[in-house]
Image (cartoon, rainbow, N blue to C red; front, side, top):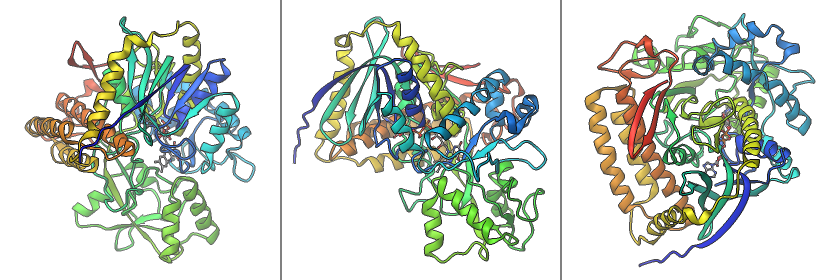
Length: 554
Ligand SMILES: Cc1cc2nc3c(=O)[nH]c(=O)nc-3n(C[C@H](O)[C@H](O)[C@H](O)COP(=O)(O)OP(=O)(O)OC[C@H]3O[C@@H](n4cnc5c(N)ncnc54)[C@H](O)[C@@H]3O)c2cc1C
């Protein structure tokens, strides 16, 4: 049966457009509106529960002067935590600029109604090394998003839910003047005239296979996070970085989910021996440090006939177990807690098996932005999981992006959108083609083909010959996807566009991986097994110039 999609076009005008209504988008909207800007937030899902922060978080890395005291010692110690490599890459000046502002956000959030204290006090626990500074504040973030939405609306920010922004618009002189998107519910095209654009589209899922294949809800990264911000920034000429560095997370087996949680038991092998040198009994303020130090340890145990590995809570009190479960439910893990209850698993007596999860992109990869949250295209800002993420990263740099974008917008004239008519038309044509195809491939098929290609050719160990073959294959499959993907309705259209973005991102990962001729951390090249120390703390940049890919180290 042949279909004919017809779009109704809606025009919107604002000073600052926030793409994505996650933590970045909402914090940016709040600050930009305080700065007098007319602000619009466009969110592809629904702001109340969307994104990685949608179901809650419970750790907020921060410096609270009255708790931590000596600032130099604090900075020195956090550089050694799991955030260390990211912070070192951004540099000590950047790290200080970031931590200078975390206490203010903590106080603001607490005053808005996100509980940042436990039993009336700042409580730091987990993701820390015994004897060193504890930098991760525990907070009750399950309902953080509805609170931030209310604060944004109170200041006059307008919110459009179920709109996927697809591309940035530029005028004939190359100035950024807005964006174009589509509704995820209706046959609607949305054209935004904006003086500044903030990208806060979050982390990226769907590039590598999820270790847990059963439930779409039990994914490391929410399904709606499909590199849209990174790819629209890239198409507009912005620099991206470090996409090829694999990140490997760890947690409960078959519950492949973002967030490390604060597991307070002891990891033990099948004979009851502790795994790792750090703890041999539950240590509640530090959680299990072994996962903090080495997230691939479960793979290593399995490969050397020492697995499986279990998180064992023997020696904990009922109160300690209840507290841990409470924090789990604030960290987007209420499904897991419900599952344990449903299966009658009492952590007082049952250990739970852990695993190293599959490959994801690292949090320090993505759009390059500076300490003012400026991307490398004037008028374009990015923050949070687009580059340097985590909850505190999203909150601090989202707020900075809002402030800077509002100030920038004040100095800009209104854009002439008719100069971007061609780009709007291109977006409409692509969407119409996807919707008009009577028979075609489903987006899940295209996405699985990408995940498999990435895993097989650009997986745990990489080499030039495999990367070259994989890139050729990816480009061939992408061409098929472009010709054959079909969307039944606007909701599937959103996922088809996301799948195409993921293919484009996959291509960049291959190019960067081939160009990184070394092995370091989880990035392993079979043909270059040594780290190249000259690249320490450098960022691996990719951008497009005159239609060509340019790769650099900075
Ligand atoms: C289960 C879980 C637990 C976690 N726990 C912690 C923790 O305790 N501490 C910590 O520091 N970090 C934690 N994290 C990470 C933390 O949640 C993220 O770093 C943070 O949410 C990043 O904020 P963001 O605004 O950059 O992205 P997100 O909060 O993910 O928001 C991105 C938003 O953009 C929207 N979007 C995407 N594409 C488009 C588009 N094209 N058009 C319009 N909208 C779009 C998405 O729908 C989403 O709402 C956790 C993550 C997960 C998944």
